[in-house]
Image 1 (cartoon, rainbow, N blue to C red):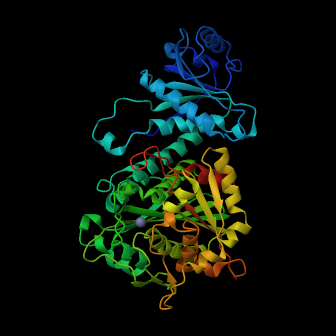
Image 2 (cartoon, rainbow, N blue to C red):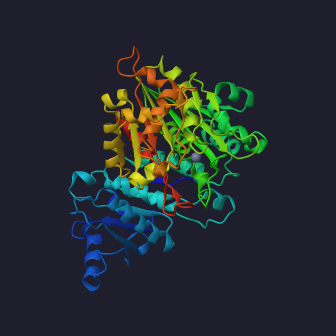
Image 3 (spheres, rainbow, N blue to C red):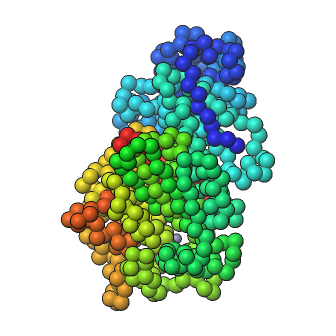
Length: 511
Ligand SMILES: [Zn+2]
């Protein structure tokens, strides 16, 4: 299945039969405001005999229009101050699902934006929502169980935006495939192969570290998590390094660490009482970062360099599993006492961030990030929203504010949390034997500040703590927790969302 391709349709005549388009979907808060007379008349006539038109998604027989089908997908609640652009996503998803169910294969999407700053990108957001609704799981595709479906959508538009949206969607599809696939099909090794295939011949450099001795030496915390998987060769860990270097003088550098826990049993602190189902999606951070790189490879923005490290590891359980109380020295030479083996994501990220820290030292205007399905606490705290936790330098530079603005416009809202002194107190090893304690020994969901304090750990264990506002070389770092937003729908088996790819790519491009 190719990712959905968006084509700009500028000419009104395409709405009327004959150019291969086979349905028209109108996403609108008003029937009166539909700009094409014939389309508006169809809708208004239908509404005069059926109260549902304009209130719920309807398919109208429309001779003379593309495919003879007009789908009106109403946007409700535009006057509700607490709604955001996602009311357009909801309408667009309902519209594209109806188009698909009706047998359409090449619909045109027309979006009428309400005159409100909140909805300024409603056309783009609606288009991406259609693609999200159309995605099918990789396992199902590979089993040949997906019937012919929509792979091209015409965007009735006066702007050129099809190319950008297609590139974003290609990245999101890669992210969904990597995140959503079961743990054997998308083991660490096969995840790395999937990335190699996705970036072959592209503008992205890729290197895969597959030597276990090298991983143990260079990524000691990651390798502690992976230890129980060493006995099973097909479950071995990998680190995937990706790099994009745009044309021209590099003026900004973005460095991303992605958590790719292929499957999280919890390790020796095993997840019990059914808490393990869905844990193949614990690789959503690495998946999102790979997706972001895919979009970059297609858009090829100038003047920036983007470096990523994906830590792919299975948190297995077995006789050689790492256990609590062990003290492991991180790549940044921080001695970490393991507080809970189910708090493994921060261990993986800390080593990746330490490598990125070294690269950042000589990079023009670096910004560091970690992206991870990290905590149950963020889900308890914010529900389905992404959270950001900035270090002092990123906060001072308003990194989070700027990402949040893009996120809001693009219908992928993000909450900002603050890192506070109590967060650093939580990672003190009470025995004094180690430099830090990785976590408390209880579920994060019932731990106060359970999604904020891991950022304190990441700073200490990666060495980034020494690059604060008053250091010789301050380094901005933003930790992004997507545990609540990586999947929508069913808590274990819902569709991956590829969050926060849309927010990050637009933040990078808007610069
Ligand atoms: Zn875990």
